[in-house]
Amino acid sequence: MSKMTFIDRDGNELTVEAPLGNTILDIAHANDIDIEGACEGCMACSTCHIVIEPDWYKKLAEPSAEEEDMLDLVFGLTRTSRLGCQIEITKEMDGLRVQLPSETRNMLLD
Ligand code: FES
Image (cartoon, rainbow, N blue to C red; front, side, top):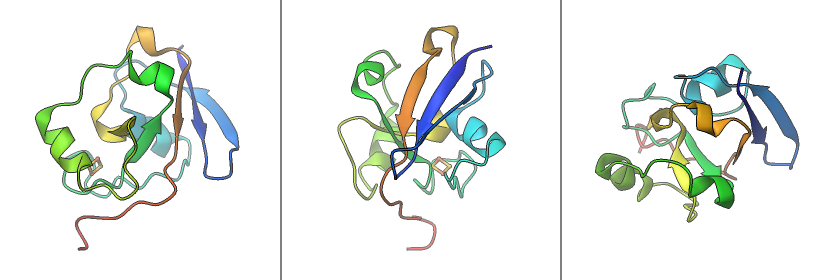
């Protein structure tokens, strides 16, 4: 079973199982990680914003144009920001490390 590590806002790390085909958002929810995901993956909220560690960011498939558009609206955007609902775990992603952003903004509420 693949594993991945979440790093929270205080720098605490939690390594969890990362089943193939699950999204990072699915895995966060399965492990009580504090990522909201208000639109459940419809790319309408951006509350699943996560920051990928730079070495890993390069290895992931490019974000879609729709994801890029939504990321433009993210509060606290970084160069390695992604939407957790849009990244599915593959075999190559065993050991993936992602950080929770300092804040999120729910576009559904704006
Ligand atoms: Fe809403 Fe990812 S859960 S954009």
